[in-house]
Image (cartoon, rainbow, N blue to C red; front, side, top):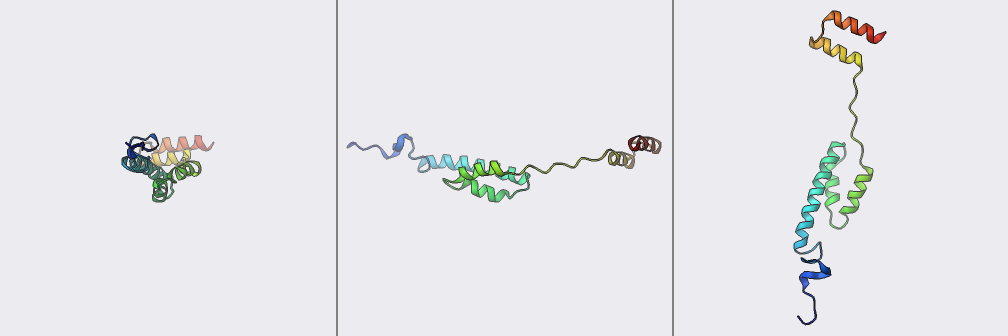
Length: 111
């Protein structure tokens, strides 16, 4: 081979440099899967999922944006807890309890 390395084994990678050649397909699949997971998570948290998907799949800098997303992502909005009196009113409205039970429970909650 005239002393030259075979071009398919550059830097010890069997399919060439990781982002070029056959290795590129593997890495693109990995980035797309991670991007999709970030997209779903961002949408659940009320953030712009499409923007974060695009930033994460950018070649070479996507990893930086992935780390940035993990650091600055917002917590999902907490579900508002209902007050006990609201729950009692709902149960009475649905017919789960009688008027007598409602009045008794309401008096206990207020007093």
